[in-house]
Amino acid sequence: MKKLKGLFLLVVATFSLFLLAACGNSQASSNNEKTVKIGVTGSDNRVLNAVAKKVKKEGINIKIVEFSDYNQPNTALQQGEIDLNAFQTVTFQNDWNKKHHSNIVSIGSTVIAPMALFSKKVTNVNQIKEESKIAVPNDATNEGRALQLLESAGLIKLDNSKIPNLKDITENKLNLKISALDAAQTAKSLDDVTASVVNSGVASDAKLNPKKAIYREKITAKSKPYVNIISANAKDKNNKTYKKIVEAYQTEDIAKEIQKDYNGYETAAWNYKVLQ
Image (tube, rainbow, N blue to C red; front, side, top):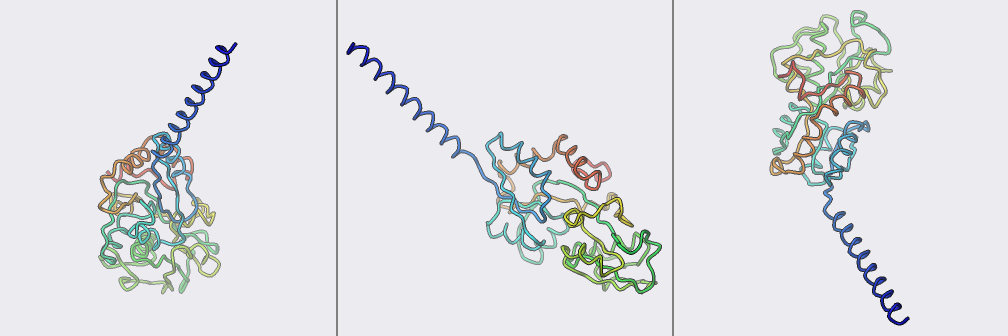
């Protein structure tokens, strides 16, 4: 009987040690998980959430950090508050680096998202009358891009500046009153202006229907500077964990997710033929 009791205690002790070891291994596994903070603007993170699910299997935990305007994500990246950001175009990043003496680099392209001209007052560009009020984003790169859209729509003419601003308008036959606003305010201005050029992310947050835009930016080889990217500090450009996130993003299933979520309004940039 004593032998059986002793055997029973031995089994219990062995099992307890096994449980402790299992818990220890579980904790170690948890400790091996890498958390990567990615800064974004706006709250529409459906595609990035899909990427997060994929890399979770590789022990990478993506934490999305939302910012309210285009100035914050790069500042946060520079200061080490986040690890990556995914909100800007190549041109925006280049302009930021120049103005802030920073060294932020692209580690992979994501989407190309055409800007669009929206209106609550007219349904066609040809209906825009003399001295109509038009809003555009006020940051240098998006302002320039918006002005190029207005030129493409036949509303104004510009000089040959790479990134034009309001001073570069050489012809404005309708004497349009063009005002530059914070990008996040362009959609909100639609009650006060005839039309507004709105970035896709801002338009999405404002629930604007891209199919009801009165004019959309055309995507050509010249659109390369406006491809959206995942950015990192230069010192982290070869970080293996960050590269895995880019690899998980640039896949056929994520391209289909982009197509499904945005109905063609945004397109996977890494395999968009016109941009090759």
